Image (cartoon, rainbow, N blue to C red; front, side, top):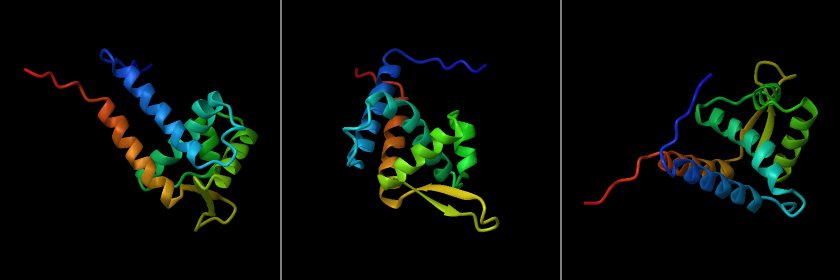
Length: 132
């Protein structure tokens, strides 16, 4: 089991960045008032984050890889992906080698915002610079 050690204030910074990310997701949604914040911080966040990190590594996960790695049921993952497609956050396309497999990627607009989020997240992990 991996144990992550946080410096003082670091976890609060990370949670703040995560909340900002959920605010960003809400901007893409006409239905954000219908989604409760706990769902956005949980299942939706995990789905978008997994897809985004894969895409930054130049990989497009399959729908099956999404639900297996996020830990949601297949049906819940499919509902989340449908919602994220409606919000124009992700798109699904057929695999080039196997048309039965759907691959998932962030839309270009959202990918730009995701890259900014990742930069903020990485910056939140940096130790505070002490002034003299």
